[in-house]
Image 1 (cartoon, rainbow, N blue to C red):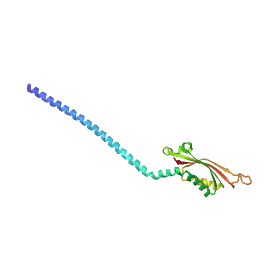
Image 2: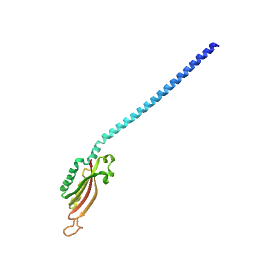
Image 3: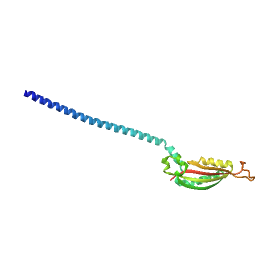
Image 4: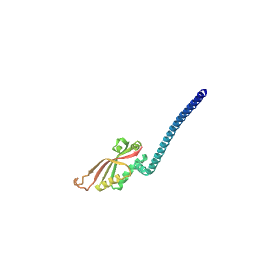
Length: 191
């Protein structure tokens, strides 16, 4: 009987030891499994992040020429004077009398053009408002306006008035004679 009790105690001890080892191993495996899941999740996240970054770099590289072209539509800060001189030169080349009434640099938000500019660009730009009087024959004035419209800048005509000058007989209906175009022109300029 004493042997049976001792055997039962030894058996119980080994059984408890086995249960303790099982619990210990179970907890250890669960912890390692959780850690492995976290590492896998972090690795997956990092792989996706790297994939997105490489796609973004590819898009940036592919759009480099287009972004440079967009920047060319904006007059550089030091280019305001040459912009006005370009308008005057185009007027003389178009054989029209041109008069720059005013040219002022203003905040971008003060213009209708603001809604057409991306916010990233808007924060680093202003506008140059130019009032131009152009006088000449109908075809020359229209030709000058077409050339002006095709300048490589982001331009908006805020106002355009075409006025027919009276000829010597006082007839305003005749196409012949001088016309005057009063143009309020807005261009984007870098700060």
